[in-house]
Image (cartoon, rainbow, N blue to C red):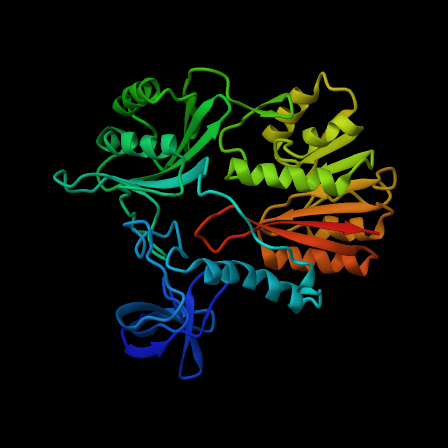
Length: 421
């Protein structure tokens, strides 16, 4: 059901999705881009989370703690949610969801360390592409609006590395060649150590004009590779050089669309904390290993076993580890087939970095094992808290939690936590 009722509200708090939350008739109203204390007129749109999604149509009085958003697109673009908050309010909003998640599972939030900040420089992003039906209208490239499918055509972006933003500009100039009228696509842009990798996802096959345009785009922007993914399969368009990431000296092939931490500087902090948390305990496990950013960094100190579920990523790890003594690789879906506690008996430590759904099954086995130290990496406070509670119930002590602001100006938070017996 769609609502159009206009109401007067005062924002009481910031929610875990970054929206301001007010109350109307006892139900929460979620208001994107609002701040605590804002007195607003808003229209209720649809039901959401036991309350209503709202949209501010008039600011009657601004709350304290507001700041001037630095980006011209803020307020429409869904890429950022928190640019309008002053630094102290911003930090509190980022950490509030983590604190509440730990409290819900009866874990002391006092172990949370100060927020570690990084510059807004993302080396990967997924942008929407849209070609209007009207040939007089230009194509659009950008993030989608908050809770809407409409693409905001980016004329600036303060969170993308400059070469990625420039590639978005170049894609816009070729949309008429890439897409049919009225169609959309997704462009996944990743800056690898070999250059930018571009993965285009569309419901259509590329035509001859699109192939020619992409070949020219690759040369103009010095792209390493372009791949087109559709329901008809994955089509390599160009590969001007092999695509890879260097992981502590190991050259790891980069499969199209593979996982990579969004910020290089945030990844450096994660690696630093993982190395410090594991110490010299060997042999050790890297679970949900991805492309081995932790496993290869830890390999200098002794034997490492890397476990990854994705077939192509596991193959990339195997290729990179082929000439490294003491590094082994296993392909295994840890969500469906976790390593059992008896298989963990020969390891002294483990690091795990699961998807947003967390590592519930694997954590149960870790809690029952004799492993001495576990380092958890997570981008989801709720599933991290659930997994942390299981480890603590199994006899681990949560030493500290380090929050990292990898996704600057968004509600998302990266977490690394150290557990010891």
